Length: 348
Image (cartoon, rainbow, N blue to C red; front, side, top):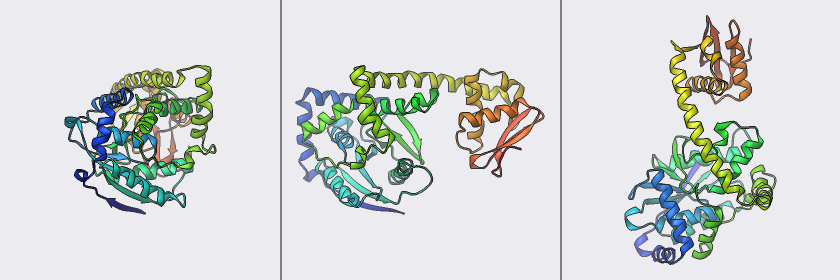
């Protein structure tokens, strides 16, 4: 269930944004933060006057993002609406939502609270994330969704995925632009350190809504943030920034590999499938990508490395079939590998 609670404000009657802009212009650190935000928006091709939704938890990062957005030069300012998603996972979440609405109002920004019931398969973090992005996409109604992901978030993501044995696609980390749950999510602060945003909060005396679950060490990401990365920084100063740089480099490599996979996919096409003899001769880095694209094009989820190996196994054989999650049936018949919706089950 999703419930919308709108709060509209009249920015002309609120003086705080004007004070914020003057404070930003008078502080070197805040000017740096504002310049990096403007650069991030330029890279994402977000133009002045464009209507956008800001994912607004009320925490330090999103508070800084919203404050900086309201402080952009007049010709660069956007048509803003803040959206706070209340997952309803804590008794005090409704009060947090109210305080987030008030915080957005002090910056002269319209705010809406969307209350959801987080449910579904997977761990609590994954379920909450899916529900949050679905709610944001519904509220945005086609407008881009800006989030406050930072360079530190990028470093955490890269480290987390490395520990899980990721390939280049995972090493690329958080993408600046991505489609999630039907919405376009943009991350203009991926080049900005979290410390700079927290300094923005301090210098502007911004109200912040703290979610205690962000410090709970029962979540792997929080342990990375509060224990592993600080230890890594102590041993190798600048490690977080270098991990974020590694993600940028991996992104460039991933784009090239994906373009090569697209060309290979076109060359191997035989009707509704792929020529298996040519497929198995591809370099390993391209084989896996071509197989994943075949499954995705059939409406399936991105298959794991183990599933790709199973598909490759029947492609190398004389024939057979394999049933993947989401009801995708993979078959090899007379040298053609095909994927299509079908009944779930096991290889036979």
